Amino acid sequence: MKKVEKATLRYSIFIPMSALFLFSIVVGIVAPEAFFNALNAIAGFAFEKFGWLFQISSVLFFFMCLYLAFSKYGNIKFGGKDAEPELSYWNWFAICLCAGIGTGILFWGVVEPLTHMFAPPEALGLTPGSEAAAMFSMTQTYIHWTFLPYAMYGICGVGIAYAVYNVKLPFQTSSMLYPFFGDKINGWVGAVVDNVCLFAIAGGVAAVLGVGTMQIGSGLHILTGVETGKVLWIGIVAAIVITYIVSSYTGLQRGIKWLSDKNAKTFIVMLILVFVFGPTGFILNLGTQSTGHFIQNFFERTLYLSPVDGSPWPRWWPIYYWAIWIAYAPLTGMFFARVSKGRTIKQFMMVAFIIPAIFGMLWFAVFGGAAINLQLNGAGIFEAMQAGGNEVAVFSFLQNFPLSGLTSAIYLVVIFVSIVTMADSMTSTISSLSTSAYNNADMEPSGKIKIFWGVVMSSLAIINLLSAGGKISGIDATKQISTVAGFPILFIMIAMAFGSVYMIVKQEKYDKTYFELEEKDSQEAENQKAS
Image (cartoon, rainbow, N blue to C red; front, side):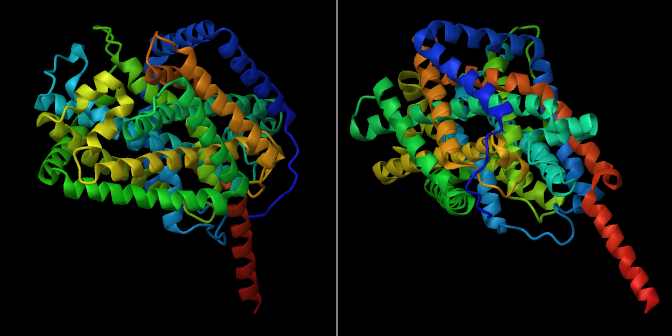
């Protein structure tokens, strides 16, 4: 990668976002109750008025990605015919997995299947612990963690990659809106859109940092007896921040690439261990049946909003997920685009959309299936969750396997590295967006800017956790900030998705590499004719 020692500040982004986040941090410290109430009000409004749009848009992005992958446009190469890839297929996949759902599956892999099975929405009338509840549980988990989140990342990633490498537009999220605004994306339109995207991703990263911090704290308590709580959380966040700032400072090749490689390999090893030493037959049976149920009931389960019964379940589960995925999508897509030059759209959709989604299904089938089987046989994992919070679930789960102390310690390290990998990629992308590096996908932002944004996001995470107090759990607090972060980006992202597809479909109008190829072929034909 080309190393640029100085990337000047993009003041239209850096100043308003710095002011907004610093204001939020101060309010969270000085008036935590007001901070909590404001977040709660915004999250409630987003669900009540626009929950339907969150649900519909998730399905829309999914079908857009499928269309681009398997239509004639799938053969378009980012950067033109002669562009060469920067990463191997493995490293590319590892980065897309770890920057996408890598952190979340470590937390929710056991928690979500057990929660939906043993505490399903009352409005659906399912008997907790029944086979019907199990099918609902696994289907809903697949919906939340596989194709739909990666469709959101994918539609943004393909749009930005095409806009940057083929249309030769700036390396910024607003480039996807070029068909609607033209060169205004380099002015106030670009500034507004990139500000909203930066606000959303910072809130999303803060939410994931909060969840991971609580899980690490509970794991340390179980393994060492150290008391978990606010003091330990602050220490954990500090350690995470220092590590991911150092990693981000080193750049893509030495930091993110190395971490993602080791992280993805560890995921595979843990998946195999649980499958082999767990209830293998039950996992295969449940995974097979739930996959069929997922396919058969995809639309009904994806679009569930409970308008008549008024169940709060959709707000705290699917809407939360769509909000956090949407909050992440533009900048995660921007990061995916950065590592996808030289690949075709079809290759991009396979590696950054379909394969990670399939891996997500395997992960939840194995971890979720094993957890359900253990719970049905009296392991008491769900009771441990109710007593100690969702963050203790995986450690209670691992106690049922050989060398539980060692595997729990390894799992803690994996959680830590996963959070670092995710935060590393997002810190680098946010830093690019807030400096002149946004004009060039190969430009590296300055270390000082990375440090600044790393500290800001970690501060939001810890303040959000501490401000919840006794009103809601820490997990619900992180769900709340995710919804707030994703709400404003929802409307912009729908426009981005249509803008991306339009540019690709109208290749002859926008694609400069297409024109260059046409001119080159025409010149070669003339030369051959002349000779």
